Picture 1: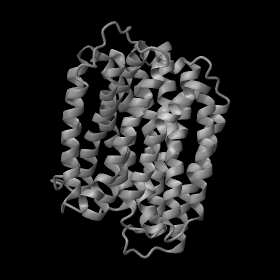
Picture 2: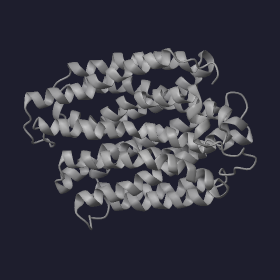
Picture 3: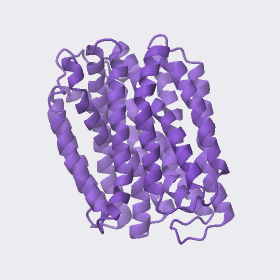
Picture 4: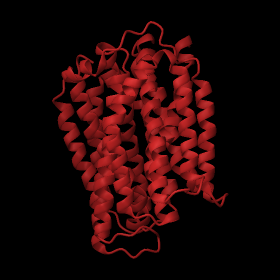
Amino acid sequence: MTQESERLPAYSLFAALLAAAGLPIYIHAPKFYVDEYGVSLAALGAVLFGLRLLDVVQDPLLGKLAEKLRDQRAIAVAAGCAVIALAMVGLFAIPPVLPPLVWFGLTLTLVFSAFSFLTINFYAQGVMKGTRMSGQGHFRLARWRESGALLGVCVAAVAPVALASIFAAPFAWFAMGFAVLAVIAALAMRSEWSTAGLAASTGFGVVLKDKLARRLLLIALVNAAPVAVSSTLFLFFVESKLDAPGFEGPLLLVFFLSAAAAAPFWGAMAERFGPKDVLIVAMILAICAFGLTLTLGPGDWVFFAIICVMSGATLGADLTLMPAIFANRMARISPSAAEGFGLWSFVSKLTLAFAAVTLLPMLERTGFQSGSAAQNTPEALALLAILYAAVPCGLKVISIALLAITDLSEV
């Protein structure tokens, strides 16, 4: 094992930290504030959309800031870890000192701003790391990094549910555990933030003028949308459509563990057969698996668990190969990569804005109510199923079409 590869577990750990602050927060935070403080779905959707609008300006600027601070990257990352840890504690562990909706927006702004800054630095550093590694360095790094991220998602997705059986305030304990993880991950990566020998910044222009980079950003935008849609509605679907309250945690664990287990496989297949063909196969399998969700009704949680295994496994391909492909391109056209991954972070999170601002208000207009005791109409449950399953399948079809016409020979 080389000196470079010996440090890869630190990348897994840091990726787990970032993943725990990303998708799981979109899964847990809205429902937590609905159930705990009675905030309306429409209001939460508006706030989440506002936060994503902030990212329209913020993520590219954070990419520029990351580039400005690259010679002090270790200090900048340590500060980002402190902010995200404290903000997570404020979101879940401290009773709102302002109106709940305002507190929700304020703490989430800090969480997502720190998340964006740390993610941009982390993936930009990964471009340097992968370039310095022998062979298919970017794909080998991606296997370690994205496997760690998926395990982080697994733990963060189910931790509040598991902690609920032990503690009266599970989300508070989850937030404290996250803060501890932030300290450990920052320490593990402390020696990895060197930028010695890195080329000067090329700015956004080089990335945006590159036809292949633009196409990869577009594919990332469309391909991330199905995950954004399904993650936003997952808890509501299991609780209300499947009538399986209490099964949310185990089903999330099945989904993300399947993705984590499959990630190394997809990475190895991409090294052997090429990332484009492997991604297209994975996307087709995802449509086949997820489309079955439309046939499910109350009590069908066992069948849904099987679908979670199948669709989770295909998610492993998306999360492993797409960033590696983009990193390969950045290594060629913009080696500093901070601005490039600022744009990447923006397009990835814009899909969550789409989900928040459209899906939650649509459900509320049909009279949908959260909670196991709620009596929802057949129309509301039918719309929930369509939004949760049919919309992601349609978006996947568009992703396949875009990828099919994209030449990746220069990646």
